[in-house]
Image (cartoon, rainbow, N blue to C red; front, top):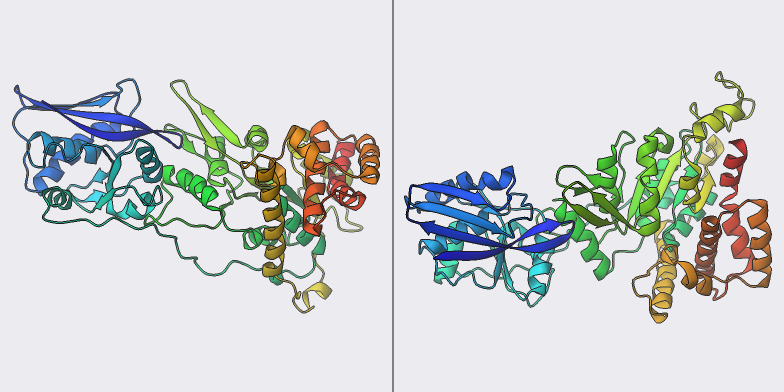
Length: 512
């Protein structure tokens, strides 16, 4: 007789069904796991054996074979421990053989029979719900799994003994409830920043339309402070966005205590980050920083200090909103729709913008061009807003704090994003949520400027040598500016301001 238990294998954020087949047959005592398991799955034999002994059960002195089907799909991770153990318990009669019918099981076992949390419970729960199955998972992951569906049967246990008692009816485990992680303190407020009104305006535009932003200024001008306050003006995640973000975080093992958060991600990797760390990859093709920043912000401080090869790998995800990680034996696609916010100094010493400063490295123009030349034109062309951040003077610092803080800006951003979501849903594009995501004919329909604006952008396209991509990005920013103003039509003033945020790119091209 073969005892069957359902579990999953992860391909990106997709959970593919895996059939765990357990056979206890006559023969020399042995415990074999087949079906293309990795090292962690092969080691499950010892964890299962010890956990069963700790729970008062002993493996029979027979030949035990565990097959993970389909056999040609690589099996990775420790979440196969629990389905193998429950399959064995069903095969030897410790639990009713039909207790696991219609259930997807995953969890890692401790040597004392406890069930430890594992990564990927939320995608597994959504996949099980799609197949009409119940879910058995670790108790610590129960609140996370409960987000899959309010009608789905979920059993979240802390140990093998609890599960055995639950199946026998001597202990009933209640269904876990979904939980939102409490906010850890208030976010930094824009009211803390004195001066830098142009930068604050650019930050508001970027937040309202989901645009990419580059800030260039000397050290100590407040670039990192401005970026750290961006989350305080972004709207909370919608339910659909919350599930998308949480599925990626679940696969990466970054959900704590099963509680999700409705705050948008803000990822700030160090400039020494490698390409697999930023884009994703490694032995198990894990999501990288750009996927963990999905529906949120990726902040790259000291942008030219990143490896050029790492920066160039961002070009395709910035356009498509996803990243495909290809390996010799498999290919994984992760969502990567993020706002790129970057900061950099104007030159290596950072003082090129100071009047009467003489650089030891040679003429300032050449020093600046060499440093900024570490960034390729195609990458800069994908950044919508280029802003100069001047140094803050002592006179600015002694001024009283500004009257407008993050709350007022966040309200305007929320209204603008609501207008965008309603517009694109009415046009039959519910997956488009911000102006930055509008493409092709849809963009030309919603962002067509009036006659004066059209004449301005036509002349500017020639004077500034705008590429087709740059032209469309100006239109997207102009549409966002019109949304912030509450205007149905993109006017000349909106086009003019949008073009002003690309003048720095034009200067960089001339310097190069």
